[in-house]
Length: 300
Image 1 (cartoon, helix red, strand yellow):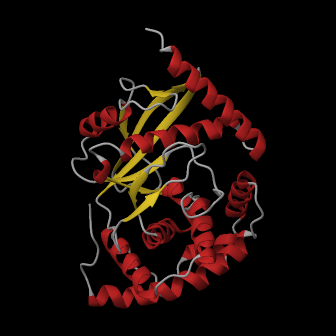
Image 2: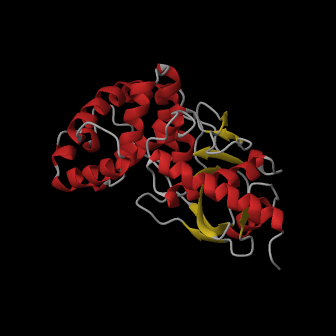
């Protein structure tokens, strides 16, 4: 059955506006299409009965803290509460994707599928995939959902910035301290095997733009490292040592990551030195926090 004419007209208008925006910003059109698709999915989540079952994290959350998103994303990261079974998550997001809204986009409800996340660090999670249509443009939608992580110092509420003049998704989210704690734990756990340059960049940019309460960040680090079974590196760690940025593979990975960012960022050795100066004092404080509060942290 063909789309109603009004919906086609809205979709064509939105697509044209996104194309103009891509030209103005000098960004790839397909990247803005993906961002738009994720925004509209998150708006549907925010007005659904399932809103309080998910917490926003990852690169889309970073866009709420910086006017101009410093690194693009092609997926959305969420912490999920409740039943983590694949069939349950698929049913939930089929309901969310089926919500109608006059934004020109339609999601393939029946095509939505789930698979286990299998990456460098596997703490259990699901990856949901589907597609969306916007005036003939096909958009790939990827939703990564984790379960059971410590959320210290607790969830916050954010309003997601949007590309066009449409309602902004209002969602529960990680605090900045939780973001830093999870990325720091990944650095420690992976060591020299770490290829996640985005984690180094994200902590670096957050540390440069925000002041952090020592106790809040220490509690977040203590809770996250405890939940993930990782010792807090009060005396340093391989990922923050001079050996890491001196590795030729790491230098190539950083160069490729920075090139994709399209903005000026210091070389990896400077970033790692900055991160060591920022993170290790908080790690020492977190060690003391963990000794005082061995069961700190809220979990989903």
